[in-house]
Length: 183
Image (cartoon, rainbow, N blue to C red; front, side, top):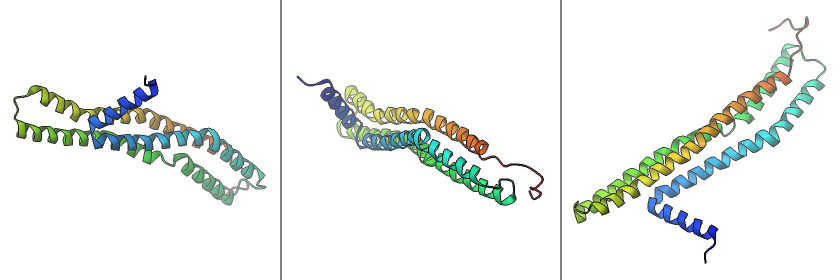
């Protein structure tokens, strides 16, 4: 008697075979997308707090935090933190956008196969045509589901990055005083 995991793997294999090679490409793109999404969450929860603490300690250790030079150093630190916070977000957006396009590619190639079979066999067999259309639409569904799974998380990650950038700016405070005449 097969285990539930073996049954699920068999169903997944049949699903991928039904959808064709494009479905495998959608799976690979989705895997890459989710790897990047999980990496970003790991960065926000584990690495960024340490980076922010180090930047804040470095900033507070400065004897002087009000001159034009201090402002430039602050800008550099903020810019470096922004780059780290936004890293991979554009790639995730791209992968989200590619998923439905791959699904459409799978549908078009599947429909070409259906028309090829219809040309060989004839269009009298409605059951064969329905089966072919079913096979052709699976990649579209898979591409849309994969894209939708990423849309929510990319929006959330972008909001999280913006929020963290504001925190960085708030942590690295310029001390305004009479010494800061250039500006």
